[in-house]
Image (cartoon, rainbow, N blue to C red; front, side, top):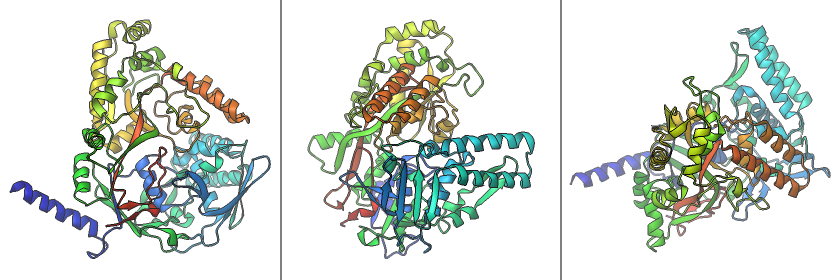
Amino acid sequence: MRWLIGIIIFDLVLLLAVFGGRGVSERADFVFVSGSEHTFLDPQRASWLHDLRIIECLFEPLVKVRLPELDLEPATAERWDVSDDALTYTFHIREDARWSNGDPVTAHDYLYAWRRALMPDFAADYTQLLWHIQGAEAFFQWRTEQLADYLKTTPDNAEAAAKRVQEAFNRFEETVGLEAVDDKTLRVTLAQPIPYFIDLCGFATFNPVHRASVETWTTINPATGMLVTSLDWTRPGELVSNGAYILERRRFKRDLLLVQNPHYWNVSEMGNTSILERFVEDPQTARLMYEGGEVDYLPDIPITHTVAGNLVQEMRAGRRKDVSVFPAAGTYFYNFNCQETLPDGRKNPFADRRVRLAFSMTIDRRSIVENISRVGQPPANTFVPLGSIKGYDPPVDAGVQYDPERARRLLEEAGYPNGRGLEGLSILYNSGANHELAAQRIKRGWEEQLNVSVALEGVETTVFSHRLKTHNFSIGRAGWFGDYRDPTTFLDKFVTDNGNNDAAYSSAEFDALMRKASEELDPEKRMRLLEEAEAFMLRDQPIAPIYQYVLLDIYNPERMKNFHPNAWKYRRFEKIRVER
């Protein structure tokens, strides 16, 4: 009887969460589970997949990906023109595009948002995507130097800080290839032709933000001279959105509720009027909620978790038709901290590529995918997934193979014979998703093959994210999905000072190859240069690729309509219709 009472109480709590805040007579049209609480709902600062998923609902870029075709289609921009030299893009913003408070969406909103992303003040992870714009990289570097000079000459001076911010705004207007020709026309001038620039314009970093509401929460820190924006501007009641939804409710580690934006220009094409996101870290609990009919979709069952393996086995046995599995444009890997010293100040052995190679060579990738995750992931020794990008052939031969004997020789060459001197190392991973199972297998391999003992550090997701970003680890679990259909969506991550370069990898040779590829106008030659760059990176091994992701989506296709799984995780939640 105790089990039955517990289920009844659980259902009552769930009903309150689903119906609470909007009236007991109303249920969200579409309910899904997220495995993690959000870090940022700020388009210019977000980089985690679960954050981007909600940002796509709240904000609308100039273009979107149409599903299932994966073609680009007009969004807030009803059309665009491209100059003959492919350097100038002119976007025409639709007249009926409005913010959730009724204000018109203008070219100035995009210009303001893109300037935010280019200000080092905000530490945007994807700022380098905008460096394709004429003068953008030079502006970013200039502002970085301006801030450094401020700290040397006039620190903690509010008047001086404000003056320098205005100087930065003026310089941006004068030197960066962005222009609001009028309220509804945005002109972008590139430094060189970029074949995937329109794809970039559909990515979250390129979303507009409502200037007046953001600036309400923006101040200048006189101690640093930096602009600082409180995250309070993304709270319910404060956030002004131009996408299909309004943020009505957000309860920490409980749920997030979106309701239809009545001013959204394309309301007539929406398949639902409300979305409820529930935060459930435990995959088994999420599965029970789904199977009890309390949620419609499970996108975040970690493929490393036993729940995922069991679901796939049931699908293969013909007992489930609501499990979707297919290859993804993403890679599961381990970061090696490449800095000269570890966070505690000790010499970092992973600053030596031979040590990185040795550790990577003793990861039995096939054993992990066959015995732990059991969902059919291809073992990986490249970072760009095989077959994911047309015209690009990942350099398989440059990747490492399982070779413990050679690994031991490399450690000896590096000054660590039989693993001696390799102490105080650990694998950092986010808890709650069974990442410890793979970590335990890898740890055991290093102990047996290299005689190196490595600790396991499982931490809560937000702590994990912060430690990766601040390079506070020796070895760190990671996963990366491509954001747009070009090899640079993977390889830019390893450029020195890239905002997503958690391994702190820095190579002048790699940077030069990436720069050369960016300047190459011939598409085929450009792809060969990018392949050469990845091969160079793999020979340095700042990361240990482990396997290529497969996507695991749990939903009933007979009930959940207009949902189109795809390798790139493109989503159009506003199109989904659930038949209950």
